[in-house]
Every structure is written in C-alpha cells, then in structure tokens.
Amino acid sequence: MKIFKTLLILLVVSSLSAQNITTTFDQMFQKKYPDDGPGATVLVTKKGKILYRNAFGNANLENNIVMNPDHVFEIGSITKQFTAVSILMLEEEGKLTIQDKLSKYLPEYPNGDQITIHQLLNHTSGIKSYTAMEGLNTFGKIDKSPIEIIDYFKNEPVDFQPGEQWEYNNSGYIVLGYIIEEVTGMSYADFIQKRIFDTLGMKNSYYGNKARIIKNRASGYQPTENGFQNAMQISMTIPYAAGSLMSCVDDMFLWHKAIRDNTLISEKSKAKAHTNTVLNNGKPTNYGYGWQINELNRKQSIEHGGGIFGFVTQGVYVPDEDIYAIVLTNANGNSPQDITLKLASMVMDDPMFTNTASISLSQKQLQKWTGTYEFENDVLRFITLEGNQLYSQREGSEKIAISPLDDHTFIFEDSFTTYIFSDENGKKKAVFKNRIDEKIGVESTKKATANKEGITLDPNVIKDYTGTYELNPNFSIAITTEGNQIFAEATGQPKIEIFGEDTDAFFLKVVPAKLIFTRDSSNNVSHVTLYQGGQQMKGVKTN
Image (cartoon, rainbow, N blue to C red):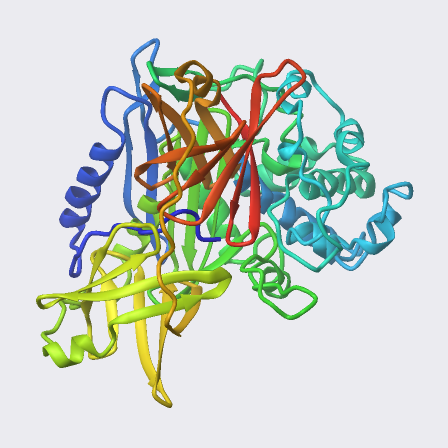
C-alpha cells in the first residue's frame, strides 16, 4: 500500500571499494542513529562474505552502554520467517500439508473448514488480527497460552472471505504456532530452540523472556515529546509465533545462509516461501510465507521487517547476487527499512543510480508529457513544466522535480520511484513505478478539487491523540502537537499537519486519507485506523 508519500532517498554512488563502503555506511548510520540516543546494529554480506559490520548509538540509555554488534534484540515479525520454515519442515516430514484446513487442528474454530495453512502463512485467511483489537495492552501484560490468545480473537467477525484479499495478520501466525505444537508435542519455543537455533549454532538467539538473564540484551525505547522512555512491557507469550524471537546480526547471518543453502528445508519448499502468492482472482499479494516479495534494481528481493514495543528491525535478501543486509534497532519511531534497502542497493553489481545522470531534453520533448493523469481510486497527478524542469504533483501535495533518463522515462531525485510515459492512439499514459508496485494513470481532463478546511480543535483535547501507533512491522505513525495544531509523521516520511473533521476523526490535505482514532473503556485513545485508497489499516498505540 502507498502510505502518504513513499520516497526512499538513496545515495548516488558508483562502485564502492571496501574503504568507501565503511566510510559511506558509517556516515549514513551516524546521522540516523546518533551517539546520544538508542542505536542499531548492522551487517551487510555478499556471496557469503561480510562487507560491513558495525553498531551505533546506545544499547542502554540509563547506564550509558554503547551499542556493539553482539547486542541481542527482539526481532518482532521477522519471527514469522522461523514459523513459516518450521511449518515447511513439518510438511517435508509428512506431519501436515499447507493445504490442510484449520478445522483439522481447531475443530471448533469458526469458518475453520474454509481456511488453509497456506492462507494463514500468506495473510489471506481473513481472520481478525488480534493486534488491531481493543484492550490488547491490558490483555498483553499477563502470560497467556496459545489457545487463550486464539480464544481472544477467534469469534471476531472476519475481515473478508479466505483468499479474497491480503491483509497483514498476526493472528494467523499465532494459529500456526499452535499447529506446530499440536503436531510435534513440543512447545513452539522448544521446537525453535532445538530444531533451528541449536541446529544452526545460533547461540545468541532466544524465545523472548523478560525475566531471563540474556547476555548483551539491548534495552528497548519509545519516543515521546520529551525524549525517550522505556518501552511498554508485555508478556513475550503474547507475540508468540508472530513476533517473540530475539537474535543478533551474526546469528541472523547464520539463518540467512541456512535458508540460502537449504539446510533446514529443500529448494522446493524454499520456493514456496519465496513465491509471490496470489489471491483467488489471480492478483499477486507480494507476499510468500513469512517473507515479502519485492524487487530492487529490477532484481527480486526477499525481505521482511519487525516491529514490537521498543524494537524495529529489517532484513533484505537479493538472491541473484546473494546480498543480505540486516539492521536491528532498539527504539520505535526510527524505522531501518529505508536504510537497509539503501545498503543492499549500494553493493549490487550494478549499484542503484550509477550512471543515471539526467539527459537534456528540448522544451517540446518535456512539454509532451505535461497534463493531468488519473490513477486508480481517483488519484490525480499533475505533470507541469517550469522553465526546463518537469514536476510531478499529487493532488493536494507539493510539487516534486522529476528528471529524464530518456525521452519517456523520468526519475524522482535519489529515489526508487520513476515515471514511464507513453502515447497510445493519441492518449497519454503514465506508469508510476516504485519497485514492484506499479500504478497506471491515463490522461484526464479532471481538475483539482478545492482544499477542505478543518474544524477548530481544543489544544487540551488534541493531546489525547499524541503517541506512536504501529500499523504493521514496517510502518508506524507518530502523532505530535504544537499549540492547537496536530501532526502525523509516518515511518520514513516528513511530519505533516492533519486537520479535524469530527470527534476523533482527522483528514490529510497532502493526499486523500483519513485517520480515525478509537478509545478504550476508560476513554483513553488506544488505536488509530488509516483510511486511504479504498483500504484501511488499524494500529495499536504503543506509547
């Protein structure tokens, strides 16, 4: 989904020597994770060789413990890779199949005879994600068994019929963990420890536990208007098979090599996990089993992030070049997603943006592509020419310069995003492409709508909404206030003002989108739902 504006800023580089890699990457991370705040550990490898390994910031702010690459982090939803591989291991052993119905393992589960393990793995089951439900923060403070967590969400109305849509769903992976326990007679934690961690020599990886003494454990933090605070504590039984594991960058490299070399599962099973699965109508989900499917510089990338209270993580693998980059961080609100993609793109055989200096086009060539283009969901983008510079402007947003690579391809500066223009039978078309995501716009005579005005807000009321809301492992929205103004800052994007529409309802002017806040039984704001492009995403307040 396009959230607000996706513009991933990259460095323009040619081939990087080992010394240049160190210098360039050090500068990138020192800027993003400075010495006086929470930090990050990073590892970049190519063809099994470590190109870069370092750490930045602090592992513990209270005791001034500087981060080092050995520190151990909660990895959040990267856990799903381990759960998916465990299911595939059991399938190879003949203990289950991915086409098994959920009802085989939970006979009383509503609609369980219509849901397959395959749909649990690729987020197309339609069952309600428990992390989007009210009361989770209270529920999550006490240890729960897998069946108690399942009972918490199983009677919720489904979001859609199985296979009809894709929506990121933590509940599906809770059920998968329960299935692993049912067919093995082992706890999920024991299975992961004995069958994966011990087998691969991942000696600094664990099923999360707040009470256990874990050497080199990094502390987790959450941002507030007055600086960082310790992350909210939840029982690690709650994220369970959807997000409970802990690891370090070196162990994650062992994990990467095991998947690459088919140590735990066969090439055939790995292909299932790394295949872009489809909906009932044949539309791709851009998700496999525990991994997102994307592309980087026209080559397939296999990636996933994780977000949990106090920690955000990101890993990306480019199979064609055997590039693996993993970044682990110990604070919410400063996602490593963009910088991890930068790292991988910059060590490719053909690094991103090498020799992509814009060419010079005539006024006639530039003028050819000006006009209004209408995309799906009534999105309008305006292409205008000022002097010798072409600009793109989404309705309600700011103008952004685009530069020609040839007479019909234009790129946003230092970005993955490009326009590809064409003229078919006298009607112009624009393909708006950001990695695997493509949107097609056609020439239109529509005009921009007048700006909508917001209602006056009480400064004391709008403070109710401040905090960070996690909508998925790679995406959070931080809400802040300044006087009687309220702002939203999405992961990797600039802070923008939002405007009151009704009680607990706000809209954006830069793009057609709304934020609707919900309250718990104590009238405290607990969740936000983002409505954009005909879709909705609900996120829990994490601080």
